[in-house]
Image (cartoon, rainbow, N blue to C red; front, side):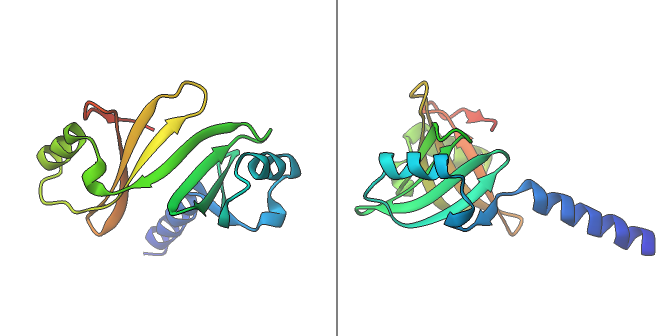
Length: 145
């Protein structure tokens, strides 16, 4: 029994470390912060997280909720804009209805890669009591992160 509890605790620690870590603005490297402030001077209520070696800023700009991912040098990697679920492309909604029958879509977003301009769509669903993020291209094909 102790062995099982130890394995469970180790698994929880590993899964917690794999997810994004919240951080204070003062912990964000100066070069990343300067780049963000230059590119998004109108950002309000900015919340920072670290994902692997990149920095994510979630914020409001006007009436939109955005998040951006920046690399350690401050270069923009991607921009994610929250959209209404009914704004997901029809092909994405059809795939969700077919492959994830009866699952509720909580949130949706449009993600644009900074370097290529490639667009993907994110649908956050509740599956098995957990929030799961799924990515799709505009044709409704599921994309791996």
